[in-house]
Length: 103
Image 1 (cartoon, rainbow, N blue to C red):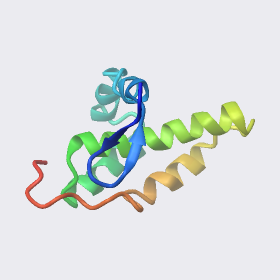
Image 2 (image 1 turned 60 degrees about the vertical axis):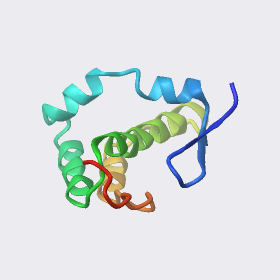
Image 3 (image 1 turned 180 degrees about the horizontal axis):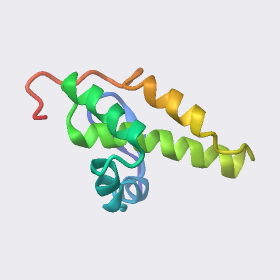
Image 4 (image 1 turned 90 degrees about the horizontal axis):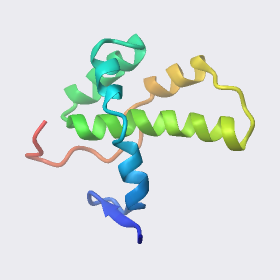
């Protein structure tokens, strides 16, 4: 399948990558249960800035997928401290929410 543009900022992902990203419904349940607490605390910050739930999940999932990539391809150990630091940097360079976008 060909890449598709997500929202309006020229990020492209394949359909299969997008489907895999949304394939873990229990991710939301763990997050809502406060597991791990740093992740739930992080989700509150972009929500207060006007980001919708869908994009917040993408922000957090990107950090997780980056960590998996580092373990699998760069043979680096997963560091909970690094994950917590990166959570603290969100929303980072993520595009700002669009005016009038539902939250």
